[in-house]
Image (cartoon, rainbow, N blue to C red; front, top):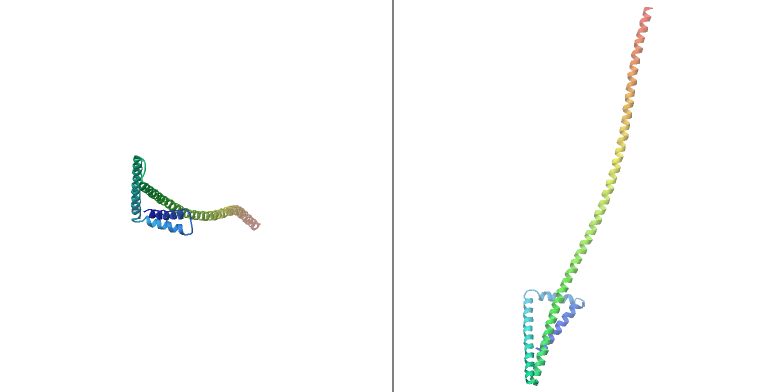
Length: 209
Protein backbone atom coordinates (compact mmCIF):
# COMPACT_ATOMS: atom_id res chain seq x y z
CA UNK A 1 0.00 0.00 0.00
CA UNK A 2 2.74 2.42 0.96
CA UNK A 3 4.77 1.65 -2.18
CA UNK A 4 1.64 2.18 -4.31
CA UNK A 5 1.00 5.53 -2.60
CA UNK A 6 4.60 6.61 -3.25
CA UNK A 7 4.14 5.67 -6.93
CA UNK A 8 0.87 7.62 -7.13
CA UNK A 9 2.48 10.66 -5.48
CA UNK A 10 5.40 10.48 -7.91
CA UNK A 11 3.04 10.32 -10.93
CA UNK A 12 0.92 13.17 -9.58
CA UNK A 13 4.03 15.24 -8.91
CA UNK A 14 5.22 14.72 -12.49
CA UNK A 15 1.79 15.67 -13.86
CA UNK A 16 1.63 18.78 -11.65
CA UNK A 17 5.16 19.77 -12.69
CA UNK A 18 4.32 19.39 -16.39
CA UNK A 19 1.17 21.46 -15.94
CA UNK A 20 3.02 24.24 -14.14
CA UNK A 21 6.13 24.25 -16.34
CA UNK A 22 5.80 24.17 -20.13
CA UNK A 23 8.32 21.72 -21.62
CA UNK A 24 7.74 21.41 -25.36
CA UNK A 25 4.47 19.66 -26.24
CA UNK A 26 4.29 17.77 -22.92
CA UNK A 27 1.89 20.25 -21.30
CA UNK A 28 -0.53 20.02 -24.21
CA UNK A 29 -0.30 16.23 -24.10
CA UNK A 30 -1.07 16.18 -20.36
CA UNK A 31 -3.99 18.61 -20.81
CA UNK A 32 -5.47 16.46 -23.58
CA UNK A 33 -5.07 13.34 -21.43
CA UNK A 34 -6.84 15.05 -18.51
CA UNK A 35 -9.60 16.25 -20.86
CA UNK A 36 -10.18 12.67 -21.99
CA UNK A 37 -10.12 11.51 -18.38
CA UNK A 38 -12.85 13.99 -17.47
CA UNK A 39 -15.08 12.77 -20.29
CA UNK A 40 -17.65 10.02 -19.95
CA UNK A 41 -17.35 7.90 -16.80
CA UNK A 42 -13.95 9.30 -15.88
CA UNK A 43 -15.14 11.89 -13.32
CA UNK A 44 -17.32 9.30 -11.52
CA UNK A 45 -14.40 6.86 -11.36
CA UNK A 46 -12.04 9.51 -10.01
CA UNK A 47 -14.57 10.59 -7.40
CA UNK A 48 -15.05 6.98 -6.34
CA UNK A 49 -11.29 6.46 -5.94
CA UNK A 50 -10.95 9.78 -4.07
CA UNK A 51 -13.84 8.82 -1.76
CA UNK A 52 -12.30 5.42 -1.06
CA UNK A 53 -8.94 7.01 -0.25
CA UNK A 54 -10.66 9.53 2.01
CA UNK A 55 -12.39 6.68 3.88
CA UNK A 56 -9.02 4.92 4.25
CA UNK A 57 -7.55 8.19 5.53
CA UNK A 58 -10.28 8.46 8.15
CA UNK A 59 -9.70 4.83 9.13
CA UNK A 60 -5.98 5.45 9.57
CA UNK A 61 -6.67 8.53 11.64
CA UNK A 62 -9.06 6.57 13.82
CA UNK A 63 -6.43 3.83 14.25
CA UNK A 64 -3.83 6.45 15.21
CA UNK A 65 -6.18 7.94 17.81
CA UNK A 66 -7.01 4.49 19.21
CA UNK A 67 -3.33 3.54 19.48
CA UNK A 68 -2.54 6.82 21.22
CA UNK A 69 -5.44 6.38 23.64
CA UNK A 70 -4.32 2.83 24.38
CA UNK A 71 -0.76 4.01 25.01
CA UNK A 72 -1.93 6.83 27.26
CA UNK A 73 -3.97 4.38 29.32
CA UNK A 74 -1.11 1.91 29.68
CA UNK A 75 1.45 4.68 30.06
CA UNK A 76 3.66 3.24 27.34
CA UNK A 77 3.27 1.93 23.79
CA UNK A 78 4.30 -1.57 22.92
CA UNK A 79 6.75 -1.99 19.99
CA UNK A 80 3.94 -3.45 17.92
CA UNK A 81 1.70 -0.44 18.64
CA UNK A 82 4.56 1.91 17.74
CA UNK A 83 5.03 0.14 14.39
CA UNK A 84 1.28 0.27 13.68
CA UNK A 85 1.10 3.92 14.77
CA UNK A 86 3.99 4.89 12.47
CA UNK A 87 2.58 2.83 9.61
CA UNK A 88 -0.86 4.38 9.96
CA UNK A 89 0.64 7.87 10.28
CA UNK A 90 2.74 7.36 7.14
CA UNK A 91 -0.23 5.99 5.20
CA UNK A 92 -2.46 8.87 6.37
CA UNK A 93 0.21 11.41 5.39
CA UNK A 94 0.70 9.82 1.97
CA UNK A 95 -3.05 9.57 1.35
CA UNK A 96 -3.58 13.20 2.42
CA UNK A 97 -0.73 14.36 0.18
CA UNK A 98 -2.12 12.26 -2.69
CA UNK A 99 -5.56 13.83 -2.33
CA UNK A 100 -4.03 17.30 -2.11
CA UNK A 101 -1.98 16.75 -5.29
CA UNK A 102 -5.07 15.40 -7.08
CA UNK A 103 -7.05 18.50 -6.09
CA UNK A 104 -4.14 20.72 -7.14
CA UNK A 105 -3.90 19.00 -10.55
CA UNK A 106 -7.66 19.39 -11.07
CA UNK A 107 -7.59 23.10 -10.26
CA UNK A 108 -4.50 23.81 -12.38
CA UNK A 109 -6.05 21.92 -15.30
CA UNK A 110 -9.30 23.88 -14.88
CA UNK A 111 -7.54 27.27 -14.87
CA UNK A 112 -5.33 26.29 -17.80
CA UNK A 113 -8.44 25.43 -19.80
CA UNK A 114 -9.90 28.83 -18.94
CA UNK A 115 -6.63 30.49 -19.95
CA UNK A 116 -6.61 28.64 -23.29
CA UNK A 117 -10.23 29.65 -23.94
CA UNK A 118 -9.45 33.27 -23.05
CA UNK A 119 -6.48 33.27 -25.41
CA UNK A 120 -8.55 31.79 -28.22
CA UNK A 121 -11.28 34.35 -27.58
CA UNK A 122 -8.65 37.09 -27.49
CA UNK A 123 -7.30 35.87 -30.84
CA UNK A 124 -10.80 35.90 -32.30
CA UNK A 125 -11.45 39.38 -30.90
CA UNK A 126 -8.14 40.57 -32.41
CA UNK A 127 -9.23 39.25 -35.80
CA UNK A 128 -12.59 40.97 -35.42
CA UNK A 129 -10.80 44.18 -34.43
CA UNK A 130 -8.57 43.97 -37.50
CA UNK A 131 -11.61 43.37 -39.69
CA UNK A 132 -13.34 46.36 -38.13
CA UNK A 133 -10.26 48.49 -38.75
CA UNK A 134 -10.20 47.40 -42.40
CA UNK A 135 -13.89 48.17 -42.74
CA UNK A 136 -13.32 51.58 -41.14
CA UNK A 137 -10.51 52.33 -43.59
CA UNK A 138 -12.72 51.26 -46.50
CA UNK A 139 -15.56 53.42 -45.22
CA UNK A 140 -13.21 56.40 -44.90
CA UNK A 141 -11.98 55.88 -48.45
CA UNK A 142 -15.57 55.65 -49.72
CA UNK A 143 -16.45 58.76 -47.73
CA UNK A 144 -13.51 60.65 -49.23
CA UNK A 145 -14.52 59.54 -52.74
CA UNK A 146 -18.12 60.55 -52.14
CA UNK A 147 -17.04 63.92 -50.74
CA UNK A 148 -14.87 64.51 -53.82
CA UNK A 149 -17.76 63.57 -56.09
CA UNK A 150 -20.06 65.89 -54.15
CA UNK A 151 -17.52 68.72 -54.53
CA UNK A 152 -17.26 68.06 -58.25
CA UNK A 153 -21.05 68.03 -58.57
CA UNK A 154 -21.36 71.27 -56.62
CA UNK A 155 -18.71 72.90 -58.80
CA UNK A 156 -20.46 71.70 -61.97
CA UNK A 157 -23.77 73.03 -60.60
CA UNK A 158 -22.14 76.39 -59.90
CA UNK A 159 -20.74 76.48 -63.42
CA UNK A 160 -24.15 75.55 -64.85
CA UNK A 161 -25.80 78.30 -62.80
CA UNK A 162 -23.24 80.85 -63.98
CA UNK A 163 -23.71 79.74 -67.58
CA UNK A 164 -27.50 79.92 -67.24
CA UNK A 165 -27.20 83.43 -65.76
CA UNK A 166 -24.94 84.49 -68.66
CA UNK A 167 -27.42 82.98 -71.15
CA UNK A 168 -30.29 84.81 -69.41
CA UNK A 169 -28.36 88.07 -69.70
CA UNK A 170 -27.69 87.39 -73.38
CA UNK A 171 -31.35 86.62 -73.96
CA UNK A 172 -32.37 89.83 -72.19
CA UNK A 173 -29.93 91.88 -74.26
CA UNK A 174 -31.12 90.12 -77.43
CA UNK A 175 -34.75 90.84 -76.54
CA UNK A 176 -33.91 94.51 -75.91
CA UNK A 177 -32.07 94.65 -79.23
CA UNK A 178 -35.01 93.02 -81.04
CA UNK A 179 -37.42 95.46 -79.41
CA UNK A 180 -35.28 98.37 -80.51
CA UNK A 181 -35.08 96.97 -84.04
CA UNK A 182 -38.86 96.54 -84.12
CA UNK A 183 -39.26 100.12 -82.98
CA UNK A 184 -36.87 101.31 -85.66
CA UNK A 185 -38.76 99.26 -88.27
CA UNK A 186 -42.04 100.80 -87.16
CA UNK A 187 -40.53 104.27 -87.38
CA UNK A 188 -39.17 103.49 -90.83
CA UNK A 189 -42.60 102.28 -91.98
CA UNK A 190 -44.17 105.50 -90.73
CA UNK A 191 -41.50 107.51 -92.48
CA UNK A 192 -42.06 105.46 -95.65
CA UNK A 193 -45.79 106.09 -95.52
CA UNK A 194 -45.19 109.81 -95.03
CA UNK A 195 -42.79 109.89 -97.97
CA UNK A 196 -45.31 108.05 -100.17
CA UNK A 197 -47.97 110.55 -99.24
CA UNK A 198 -45.62 113.43 -100.00
CA UNK A 199 -44.74 111.84 -103.33
CA UNK A 200 -48.39 111.45 -104.25
CA UNK A 201 -49.06 115.08 -103.36
CA UNK A 202 -46.15 116.22 -105.50
CA UNK A 203 -47.37 114.12 -108.44
CA UNK A 204 -50.85 115.62 -108.10
CA UNK A 205 -49.46 119.14 -108.07
CA UNK A 206 -47.38 118.50 -111.18
CA UNK A 207 -50.39 117.16 -113.04
CA UNK A 208 -52.40 120.33 -112.24
CA UNK A 209 -49.71 122.62 -113.66
